[in-house]
Length: 637
Image (tube, rainbow, N blue to C red; front, side):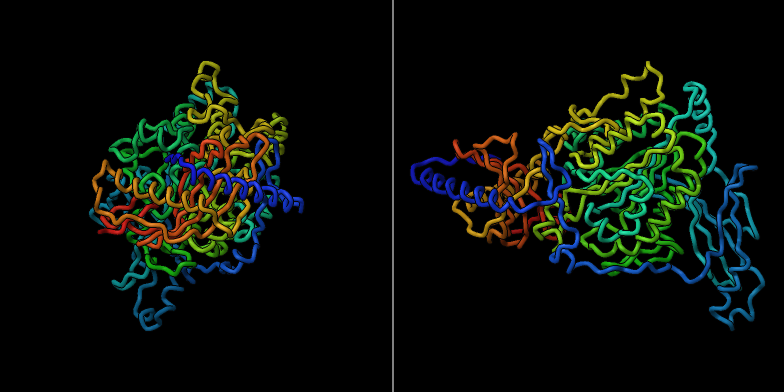
């Protein structure tokens, strides 16, 4: 939205304000003589290094201890038998005695072994699963069929149910084996596998605070941290789409609208390309109601990958013991494991089963990090360190390029509203692992990743990197499939050095989300600050009027400015136009009491003001018509 200011009085006011801002900029330059720490300090970008233990943030943090979901051992286990190429479901007879000890009177009248049955989980639609008509009985062990990826198990003693659990499997698939074999012959050489493990809502600083053991392990074992990794949009989906398709949200909405039936099927997801070039593929994400490709959109009509964990997790969430309404900092359980552990265990099993083949695995967790708590994630620190140790022990790291990353930092809540919250929200963590043989064959990759540790990077770059990996051993006649990111032509593989002159525009990062400028916050708000604040309010009101083609026009009470909570002005970089100042305003509005933060540019010559973007900083609440309108809420008339 653009506003042009005219008139003699207004121009005189603007001139005085211009002098005031120049004074602020001069003051900020003087203050900046004090040495600052930067995670990126190049010609095109300077990103300050926020202190993760800042007092305003640290007061909200408390370390949470990991707690087991049960003191009892699981009564069943599922193991893959390489000889038969089937999974076997076994009863742990020794563990049965633990269950009987809970009720000694019951144990005195119980049989010596439990009576168990299992139900295979079958996908019906993206929102529906089928467990069959009957629970299939078995005794000490049973061979499971290869047509499904998961099973629920129940066990009884004297007619009383004593046990319910679930097991996800990676069954043998004939068409997958044929694909792998055909492409192995076509290539004539081994290619690196690719594994992406992502945790929602964790900034680089949050990883330092909440997972120091995990971070220390990554640093000690040769991972490459890319500290200047900057998100490109607000929440999860708009940051995952560039990473997985090379397109931004607007392009995707026009090309393969996720709100339409079979819309996502038309999107050029990177795993499709990996599958077409002979890889086996998998995707898993916990907390199915808010899954990245399902929350407020249609999801997939058909499973998007060879091994799709969603149906099993939907069944587990419906049938396994676990609390839906938990305290803010607790870890949700599904049966005998935390919800996220079902995903991590599946990642371990998938990479173990296909460790001698080429695979693409993408695994995402929400339950221990999503939301506005900065403490909950800390409970999983030791577990995640052990997770990566287990990956190394089973040989995964010997032949896989691995990306460990997040989508963004905290989006709302008290921590986000601190001065450092702006920076943390925009800087998720990113670590990359190269297998030993790739380091030896391509020392230039190692050099590039070391160079890029303190360079500006974005999700578009990860997408181009995933294509670069495919290029390493793909036939020359397929090179045309492996181009760059369509919505960021200047983005590049992270296995090549990022230019020192790179700016946010070069990395596909809009001004509102760009961290390449430091800001000076001042308390004396000018008349122009109030004009900018009013422009923000007008813009939000206009969004409501246009929402869904005006479906709700006139039904919301217009928002009005309550106060300016914080105003900041950017220190300009060498490449910036000196006539244009960049501002960040945090405002509160009535009648919703909502808090918004906006980035605006002001042309000091023409007096034009343009809004680059707006974020909602208080907790997102439902829209009053039963819908959720991104982060903008409505107060009904």
